[in-house]
Image (cartoon, rainbow, N blue to C red):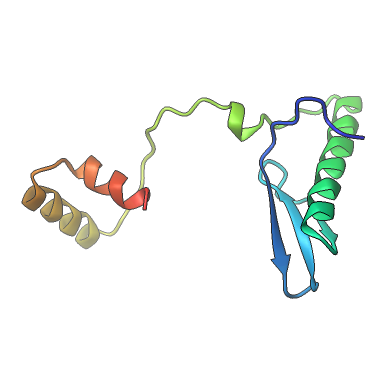
Length: 109
């Protein structure tokens, strides 16, 4: 079973503990699939997600929206210690740019 128009966010990484590749899905963080090759790990996690979604539909549960399909405002609040805030404000002032621009630049690195 494979999802039609699958837009979920997948990642395959090596698991040293399991000595295999592990397939993951960001929208379903509790799921994983172990396999000997990266291709098999991706195929396995995609199949597992499709099965879980079919089960969720049959139980009339809410299905997570793919991250790729969500709209983001570009705004979020981050709390930092006062000294970090001060240092960032100083860096912004010395550079002649806004604090938002300093922080955005740091986050995108």
